[in-house]
Length: 221
Length: 221
Image 1 (tube, each protein chain N blue to C red):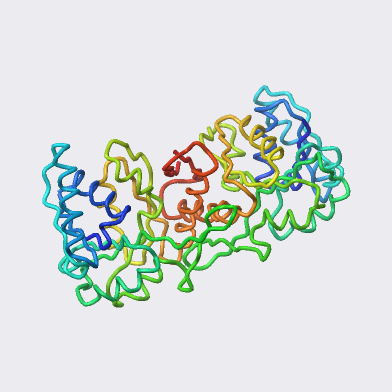
Image 2 (image 1 turned 90 degrees about the vertical axis):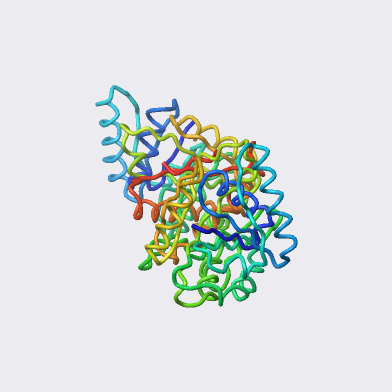
């Protein structure tokens, strides 16, 4: 399978790229608005994995090129770049592509971080609104700490929650996520259940602020 | 310490009563609008614990009587009864009482359950708005499954999240919650962080609906 990480030069993209490349046999493509930056980052990730004895062929492209012919496209961009990014890759997507949304809108006040619910209902719903109608969208990977993900010394041992309206696409992402060592993917139902999933991210950050749990993840038992 | 469970005849009240009475040395009072019902339930809980070799003196009272002179008052009532309940006990509360709010407002659509945020910002904030200004309020116990809590055969092994603006009151509830076997209490900061804590409850119910995890709890690691 071919996985494109649009915005794969950022924190969460780096972590997913390293884990997918290390733990799965899938081809990993790094996307960025700037193809040169994508190539530089792809080389960095490849070098880090090579230092660990893992030989991979991570390549960098402009976002639309990375998304082209990818089976799974992860939108590893901040929520305010979601619409632009989806529009910029839209003509490379087709019904066989699964679009994955890990982004969460948050705002800060003096107490901490809060879920900033977009008018679409959730960031995942915003992706579905913006993408071509026949392209399935799955929300996933929201609660993973970018820092923990990118530090290959650290074991994950945590869960990620999935939402989506297309069962086949959910199956694809559930299986793919489960291939990352220590990660368990659990479905929470239709895309309309995304707000409560996305709300977990500011909660985890507030928890890290007020306890000695850092880069905290979640387990459901 | 004396713990009053207003609405302690309901599901979550039953679970907390049984666990507090079994696992701590504190005095447990069951409150209800109907004192006769409170006494009946208190006797039931006492009998269940007695069958397990735990001798306790759980007593039942009308809510205001239960709250009177209690150190901790847990509002184990549905969110639409919160204001009435707080008003009915208000003149029994003083600054040395800690008011604990476990309730969550939820609404159902065809996808599942959703967090129904009250205009006050959260149910916990609604409690703080309604209670006398000098009575400290702590949000806690939101994510505990009533069914699991009331089944003393089952180990909890889960976390509960606390929010509140009064550090002393937070300490009281953190210690009290931690006395329940298998429960760890973690502070997530000020009361303004309650919405993300309360949003976890519909998420857990959606998760139980869509996976084989029943009465699911949460662990942060």
